[in-house]
Image (cartoon, rainbow, N blue to C red; front, side):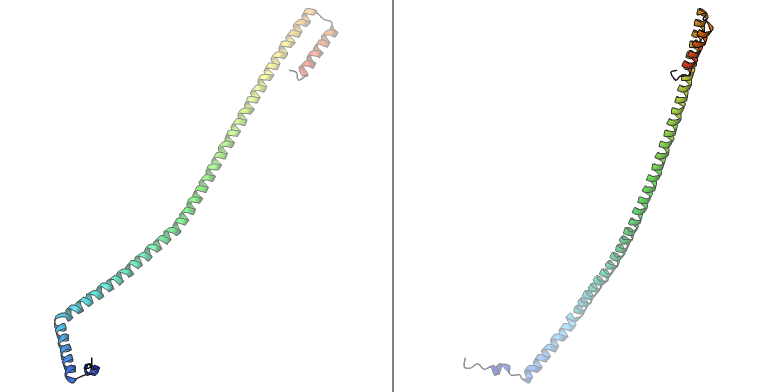
Length: 171
């Protein structure tokens, strides 16, 4: 390794610089002639695709925001609809309650009226029976008076007893 010298490898000569420049220029001209248009077309296509993706994502974002707004509006309306349904149900329940109460009151009135009519009828029947019994007793008493030919004091006593019995609530 005695013969190795780093300075020999690091030296720059003018011919090397010119050759490197010429070879670079040739490579650039060949690349431009055959590959540059394709490279630019590829870059443009890639750029357009990226822009379309960005535009598409903005469009999707806008659509999502619209859907979100519609959903929020529906939720707001759903709350109002639920409230109105509850109010309607309450009103219907109150109306039904009032109808049931009215029907119950009508039925109670009808039953009371029927009971009063039954009581009146029973009262009339009782009075009729009482009159019948009183007349039967009076006829019997008259028959007995006629049969026995009582004196005036006994007849008077008998009539007084009869009137007293008729006036009692025993009948």
